[in-house]
Length: 246
Length: 281
Image (cartoon, rainbow over all chains, first blue to last red; front, side, top):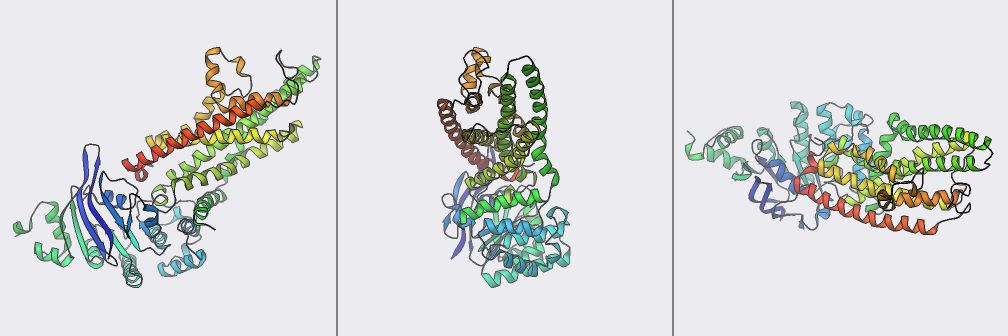
């Protein structure tokens, strides 16, 4: 069963075309990577998947719910993490997590916060204001917020940005374990190609709002005859088609 | 607790936690209402003494009552309006709107939470001023009776309508429009008959005044306080002008409906433009 089904999705901002007629689906329990340079349409696509942005045309179904008509039923079972969207700075980490536990109607709030603190090593941060945390600590707290409701679909925008390699690896490992334990579906936008290779079962390559290639990381590496996704990314960004690659 | 109520409580808790951790915000709540009351209270006290010494017994006291009632009741509208608008701005300032609107929180639940906070902010701001007026000038805002509660309720609803209009403009024009949160209702003060009757205004401005619920509230307030010694058309002290309250309530319903439609329209427009993610920038 597909957790996310996107059909002929298009977004215009006035005359500018941000996303052009893209279609894809994400099987439940898998991880889809969205790759593309700046302005490729990743953020616009994620914003439409989250219901923050209305598409110009096309449809989105998440967990069986049509996002145009029934987005709140889907949003209750989804969540989102991005280092570029902040949490209230003056509230402590615990207070922030409580707020979102209420918004997502999470039972046993305090127990859930303790679980997340155990899993993401947040105990020392719980009483500190969110605005006083380092960038890496904020990213971990944002991840805890995104897991507060045990989501079935998790949208991750650069989930390990600003994390040191050790912490980034810990977070990636934790995401893998969470997916294995819960069957959660991930949609991941990242510029960290090693992260995409490790976490994603499928990858969409976006350029100027359109899907220019797709496949498993292995298929893309074979097609472009490259050793890493970063080289594939550069080939696509520089308009080098597979047959042109030396 | 039902999920919808819990979501509303979640947003109320978010703001209560903010106030618990920010004494300048707490101080700011009561600062202006208290200062306004002090300035106008001493001014009114001065006039009351002068008029009283002139032999017109009761005129000074009535004038003082009208001024202080005007100041305190207008603060109810101002603090309610600012309470809702600033609550929304707090989400923009903390760049939190993106998280809030990808949660199951409905836009109207956010508005409900902001309304609850506006009531709490209003009480936190105006109650100290009311108590101080009682302590300093022996002035009891509630002396005319339960009708004062109806005045207050009407002014609060007007504050919500203006605030929803301001929030709609912020959704439309971004955080650059945030100054409206502090200025719009101040701009309506001259037309709201807070300190003088609508009849004082030039004839061409009176329709503007009569279109505002606040004008009807303050006309009613003056009648209740007892303007028997003020002007030739005075009504007996303690008279409740029910038709003024009816007008205020009717106008409030109309303005609130218009503000809700405006908010709904601008929220949808913000989703079309993608403004919910970038509004703080």
